[in-house]
Image (tube, rainbow, N blue to C red; front, side, top):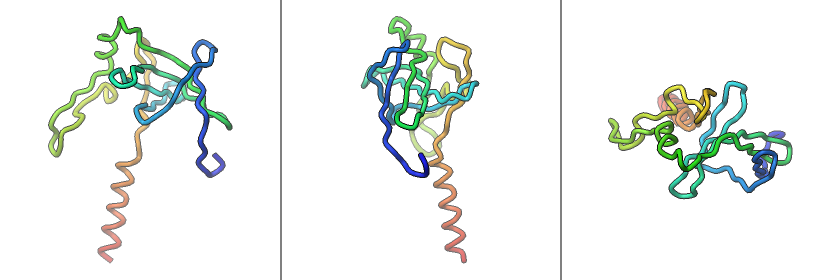
Length: 137
């Protein structure tokens, strides 16, 4: 904000009622068709948290508004919707395919979402190109 990084308090809301919430590295970020930033977490093994929330940034804090949370009776359907295929790739073991790469939607809705990709791979590629040019001169 204003050219600098600031810590923001996280406020979570469900049906207008404030609740404890957090945002961390396990969250994936998306845009929906209305331009909203949507957070998604599928951490049923460690934290037991699986939900979609709308992220709203204000001058003083970040708000997370609950959109969809798992009904544990629908766990199998939830997992089928959020599938990932892991295995041996050409260079290393990792993610081979995922629901995120195939026109993802918010679970239980037809609302399309688009992943917000990290720029880490681009940064590495640009650094390599710049380094190569500097070393060749």
